[in-house]
Image (cartoon, rainbow, N blue to C red; front, side):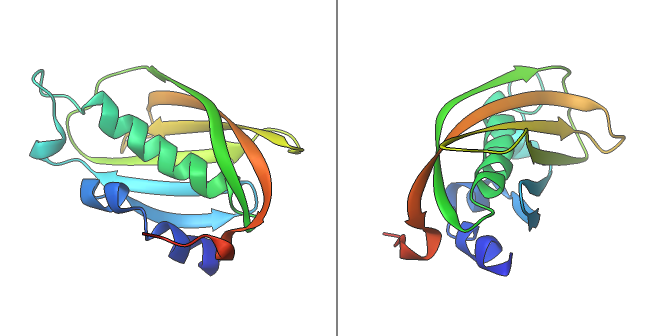
Length: 136
């Protein structure tokens, strides 16, 4: 799984946001983020795009955890409750056995384990090894 962790270090936007990919195993990924002042919107809560990016990184890592390229074909997110401080976790899990299309759920939780956002995603599994992908 180190190969997948190393691959996603190339995600410049997630890194810019301060998101860390902590763990990857088959059909599973965990990403974390410590909320800071620059992550908050005008209401003083975590900006929705930040929550989406956190969930999306975990989703991408879980989709690609077998070392084959998978790309999102449809995703959605429901914002359940606002959060203004603390460490957030995004846990992505594969739902069932993927064929050409894999289904994933990502729960974003706050430091107390309460659900902040629920993300669902579909990924198209390509017949390409992730090590063949180059970065610009």
